[in-house]
Amino acid sequence: MSEKPNVLRETDDEARKLARTLLRSARSGALAAIEPESGGFPFVSRVLIGIDIDGAPVILVSRLSTHTQALTADRRASLLTGEPGKGDPLAHPRLTLQCEAEAVSRDSALHARIRERFLRRRPKSSLYIDFPDFGFFRLNPLRASLNGGFGRAYVLTAEDLVIASPAMAALAEMEASAIEHMNTDHADAVKYYATTHCRAPEGDWKIVGIDAAGLDLSDGERLQRLEFETPVGDVTELRPLLKKLYR
Image (tube, rainbow, N blue to C red; front, side, top):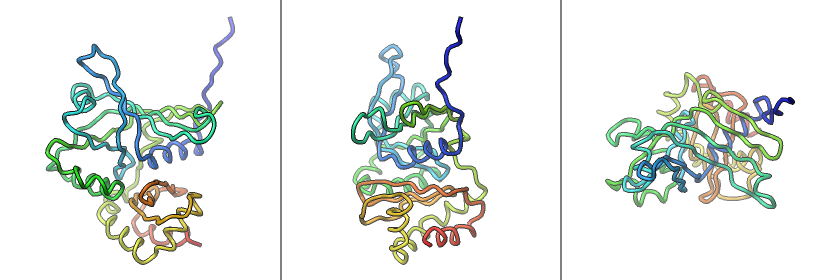
């Protein structure tokens, strides 16, 4: 009896980078949760995606929605990211993230950080972000499946996706001021990051997120992710790295 062929490739740095980029550059995604009243059937809906400082995705949802009720009853969920382009949609990369949903308390420091980062990424959410029936969930990664196109399938661990750096807390404290400085005083560099490193089209590109592993950039409609070659280990490394990327 012949063995079943293994369709998975060995997970390498290229696959990890692609997975992180698909997750962190996603404007929205398809969220699957288990709806208790349906007898355990999955319920899938489209959600807006933000990213916490450690790379974990976050969602802002109405507490009255079906997926919020499902996540409250059962924390298990899956998130699909990756937009199809021209031609066969299955030829384009996508990432399925299995995760545990963590409700974020409104009066916590975590909520304040996530709210600030989400607003920079999705400024129009200011219209409803503070409504009493809206709240955040952190989707803590457990494992992921990456399909990089035909014949390119990988399995990733949580460690492949999250950002681990001793500089994370310090970067979170200085993030807002660093973003304002870069967007105001170094707009040419920000545009260069988007159009050269991310190969994005011309636009009014702004930095909307800085973390130890890279930059999030937006022109108001599109999001791009610039991943550093290696995560920043100390905040003093950030400025010379940004200067180097502009050369």
